[in-house]
Length: 513
Ligand code: NAP
Image 1 (cartoon, rainbow, N blue to C red):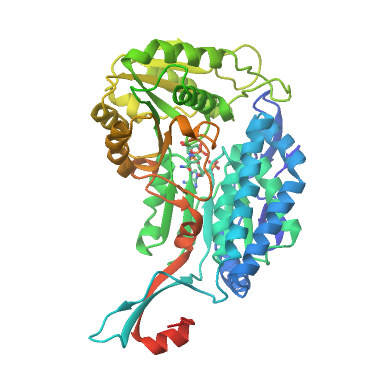
Image 2: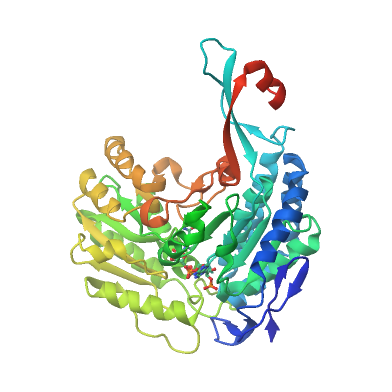
């Protein structure tokens, strides 16, 4: 039995308390345990603030970028071993595992490369200076300074590698030490990634600490310069946001929560044309990749009435062709959901949706044999306006078709009923229709992904989060924002307007002009 450890204050510790079991979701075999307590959180945070932070901030942007490049290489060197752990502890097919792992190393490398273009000063200048006085003598510069705090990163179970790496990339580049907490059910992969990071020797002592197990009480020790970056359910996100200590000290909190993402087919899409094909392909990928356990996966599929039969037929054909089973079988294209709790949640959610939908394919019934398997489930709303369809995230291989009249106004209204989402994808070549829908839904989404004839084969689908574009969404999606190139560093930096004699500011901050 593999007893997982946390890495704190330069040591790997086993923790204490009753062990929590981690399983292979394909077989239900117990693989590892974590222990929920025994970590002195106050000391962990002090170690980060007093040891890790100063060491990181003594380095230049470029030197910190070199750390990220080094970590990306290390993860890549261990790719095969990590894919194996991801399959066993996460129920991920080889493709699903690569999505997580290559996403992790790719994001680290992206930020490593970005650092090469940053200045040699310890700060960044934000935009052009501003004249504040009667003449140009009295001036303001907005300066982005690394904050002397800790980044507490709380990750969801579904992307143990990418989730840890994408947050870490931005924090370390900004000079912020990291305390990274893994989602428990997939912590075996997260712990191995953490070991690779520590063993690399690339991150200065105190710059990276890792927690597996519960973190009850951790947030009570955070202070004004710290930040919590949370990824997980809206419910846990609200609890974190409401933590009295975080409120009292105005601790920055970034929440990436769940999201009832939609894909909208425009009425102009020709059946079997490239736009239609992308729509069907991307929806089917989102439903089956990682068994639908992606925060960006499509949950609501808006289909014009006249295309309903064609869409159902095309999706059913693809979903039926998806081989489901133990991910150690290389022919398998969709594995189980990650845990027994997930299985129960997903089945219960499908049943609730079925009260308002016809079942086109799949359903909540158990599948034969061991493992936490769920059939790919395609539902069709009886009434697209039913509240539950816009409110319940079933975090598994399940999505609901919402038939609509093809009008831009109807699509906009239905999509925005999600209450704030990470991503919406729209598929059309009609610029007038897009011109109505896209600006109408943009305020309610972190990303809007437009599929049209010319985008065929050009890019990954809307479910992929790429470091150059922001990730996050308003409202129910948490109101957070991550990545997006240098924008991803903002939470770790303080933007200060420094005002005074222009020449003095120029000399102080190394600004020419
Ligand atoms: P979760 O139950 O909310 O847990 C998320 C993380 O929070 C885990 O590490 C969990 O630890 C920890 N946690 C739980 N209670 C906590 C508390 N009181 N204080 C501090 N930390 C606490 O979510 P999940 O089941 O892991 O993930 C699935 C959800 O995440 C889905 O709803 C999905 O949509 C969402 N998600 C969102 C994004 C995004 O970027 N927006 C990405 C991925 C997933 P334990 O595991 O130890 O309980």
